[in-house]
Structures are given as C-alpha cells and as structure tokens.
Image 1 (cartoon, rainbow, N blue to C red):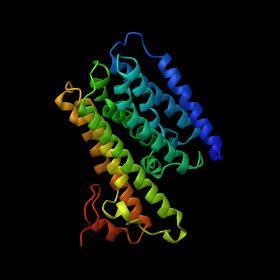
Image 2 (cartoon, rainbow, N blue to C red):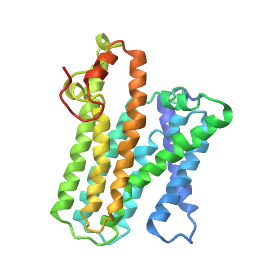
Image 3 (tube, helix red, strand yellow):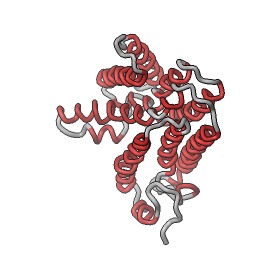
Length: 287
C-alpha cells in the first residue's frame, strides 16, 4: 500500500493522464456525433480509473475525477468549434474556477491510498458480488454519467456559433457566484475544524447557521448555472432542465442524508442542529 500522501497524488495524476490519453486513442472513428464522442471518451476513462482502483484497492482514486474530467470536455467543446474568445471565456472561466476549487479541496483533504472515503466503504460493505456492482456502478460509472448529463446543456452554446449576449453574461456570473458560495462554505468549515476545541462539535455558525450543507447548495447552483448557459443560446430543449435537477436529486436524496447520518453518529449536538437547520437552502433556523 502506498502510504505517502505526495506519492499517492503523483500516482493518481499519472493514472489520470494515461487514462484520458488512452481513452482518446481508443475512440472509434465511426463515432461522429460530438456528444456521443464525449460520452464514450468519458466512459472509457472511467473504466481505466476503475481498474486502477481495483489494483490499488482504493476507490478514492475516483475522487478527483468529478472535478478533473469536465476540464478536457469543456476545452474540447469550446476550442473545436467556431467560438469567439468572449464566449470561450464566459463558458470556461466559471468551470475552471469550480474545477480548481474542488481539486484543491482534494489535494488538501485526501490523505493518500491508506485512506478511503467512508461512503465508498459503506457501499462496499456487503457480499463480494454486490460490493463490486456498487463499486463499478455506484462509485464510478453513475457519477460519471451524472457529470455528463450535467454538462450536456453546454453543447447548445458551444457548437452553434452563438453570439454572446446578456443572458450568457448573467449565467456565467451566476455560476461563478455559486462556486464562491462553495468556496466560502468550505473555508468556514476548514477554519472551524482547525480549532482543536471544536473537535466533536457541530459547525453551526456563519453560512452553516442557515444550511446544514451550504457547500452542497453551491454545487447544485453551479450545475443550474451550466444549464442557464445552455439556455442563453436560445436553442436548448425544454427537457434539459432535467440535467441540473438530477444533480439536485442526488444531493437531496443521497449526499446530504449520508453526511447527516455520519454527523448524527459522531456529534452529540447534531440532532438538535439538524432539527433547526435547513438541509440545503439558506433559511433562518427554526426557533
């Protein structure tokens, strides 16, 4: 087992570079549709990451995939078509900001291959066959497909030679503000945890006074921002509202409950906090 954090990160980066490169080389020439090409490329890369997680016996190898994989996708979408510099910046800037923020969190918090996310351990805490089904689909493939679905609205704004307009500016600003909300929430939590006196206590101050998961709220709003970018083209299909809404469902029904359950088990004051504080939206606490 690789125990050094730095060595683990270098190994992780190496696996990612190889995975994306090989996945691109393996793309069938018969695939000509832009989004189909992206989906297959993304799935191939996920399979390589999955194989790496099996070799290393640690599914946390997949953790940075959520934030890293959209970068080459956005670069491909914005640079492979006749887009203006203005449009490229408006679309790419908030997504790069988001990717840097999440990847930075991973670099700070991930301890290396001797540590695995508790959620992954819970999903694999069953019989061998079910554990591997959960590992491949629940931990790797399903999140990959959700990211693909979340990014899909961008195809309307990047592949149709759209002129920039006020709606794209507003959507880009909205998306950046969503990432700022995530970043501020993370920093507030990180500052709280850095104080040894707060060990075992619940963070219920600043943004966390109004939401149990303000960072997740920012993440959900980020995906709605991408939807608004696609909508600004004037060409997006009505059903694309499902793209960010699936992300919303993921956080409401999966991510938030899992974090709440863990906090209930680890913090004696969390039940009271949970009863008084909104799950996701920033709302005044109940009296």
